[in-house]
Length: 285
Ligand code: ATR
Image 1: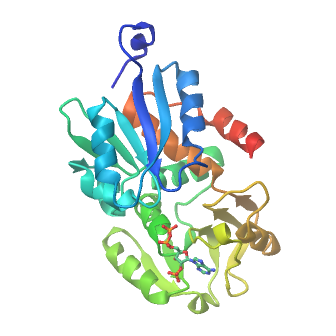
Image 2: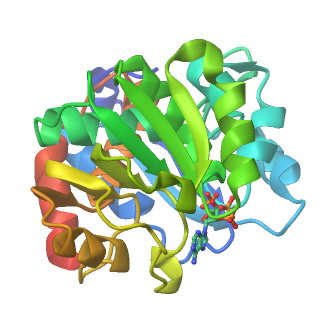
Image 3: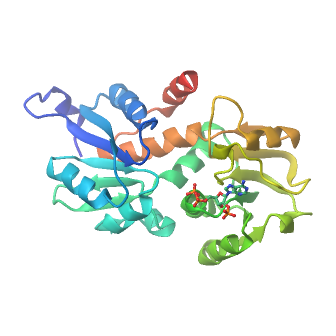
């Protein structure tokens, strides 16, 4: 970790950080971390590195050998990063995936997963939303969903239902987390007749412009909807939410910035003010 004093230590090169993924060209992480660094006066660089399939270990090794201090890891390498880490945070262990690596002074790699914390901070801090004692429906049973289940259960919802087009996957995922809270897995048709206070979309359907086939009447009065995807226009899921009269409709831009802020805090020991950064990214969409 480097103190702000190093801002004036021009003898040393700036600490270097990067995001690795494939594809990577459209990643907003370099812009987000540049804004954080400027705001908190940290002397550091942050670049985007395209990694070929199967090439993460080599790429991380090269980056660390050249003095790199930390990495964000995105699709499709979060599980590979999990295996590469010498030690992992409890939340990374639960997620089975790592999106942040810290290259420690002793040469070892510490792996964390900041995705779920980013979602919870966006809901609870940025929007004063409530998860505690609420009935939460989480749509999807892939990596995006798995990464946020632990942090959502930490907020003590009255129940967390995982629903997936392929029901088995939701049931298996719910079983895996059953010791941590009131959680169940369902297929979409089985949701009929239930209502939820908060519906979170963690499927990749919005990315593909697809709408989910959900039963009517799922959202309770004053219910909120959150799409972990974001776009300039409302996503298909948020258009569905509008038709359900959702009291609040949020996309994943805040989560993106918040998960980055958690990584920045792990690396630099400083927590950036995310509000202006979210606003800037929203303007640039
Ligand atoms: P990610 O890491 O982004 O979660 P993933 O592991 O490929 O990606 O998972 C994608 C998720 O989106 C899955 O839950 C998938 O449902 P299935 O398990 O039934 O495939 C869900 N998904 C993608 N497109 C969908 C669609 N059009 N309707 C419903 N669910 C969809």
